[in-house]
Image (cartoon, rainbow, N blue to C red; front, top):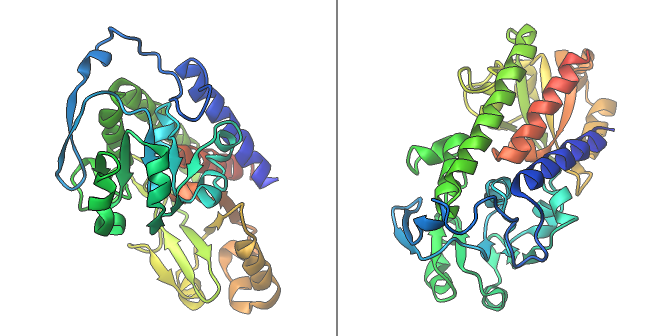
Length: 328
């Protein structure tokens, strides 16, 4: 049932974006058509110089249309601004596996070019992209090879600190992609729309402001925790309360020490590892069974895209929390 809800939200979001963009691409070589037409201010803004996440200045002669993505963090901002990349890494697990992206994958093809840590350069040559987006910390060692294929732009696996002010917030990440694609107005509209959702969610979830929440993924031997900005930011997010200050690895025993009121579980559609681990804990772990959230039935599964910091997954997370908590 929860996965059906994720897909309903995703499809509604996709239809809204495509309606706003005026239609859908005829094939994977084209962008989702923009409202901008030749002669508009944004069309006239080319060529432009874009400064990427590591400070390189890249001259873009025209709006990028055939974009290749080499990191999963790139998908959502690009799609949210109305464009479908021509190629990307990890399409099976991300593009076809995240609840936020599945409706797009069912409609628009993206050519797979291997794994994030080992992109297929020969396939990239065949794709003939206008531009390649890469993460310096992951693909920095092959950047010179990438430059032989197409102009490259370094982006942050964001939102993440250390790459300038914009890359440290989800709003700033959307703005960066807006500048990159010549879609500044669309970026601001998307930010305003999401901020409106957050304001509404914060008001609806005000009764839970004194409760503690953890966002976690159950792994084979331990637990990994997140602190999504949309959920925990007291000023620009819902303002939920976390029992820990920084995300990272947790043991089951340390989770018991935190003893949160609500547990938000990472739910990955493409495999059942998390579900199997949850079933094992429910059946066999007295520590897990002793948790306040477990005893109260306050364990909520949310699509893994909500943990990524991207705008599409963020909306799924916001709507899922409101749906689950206001129905109690």
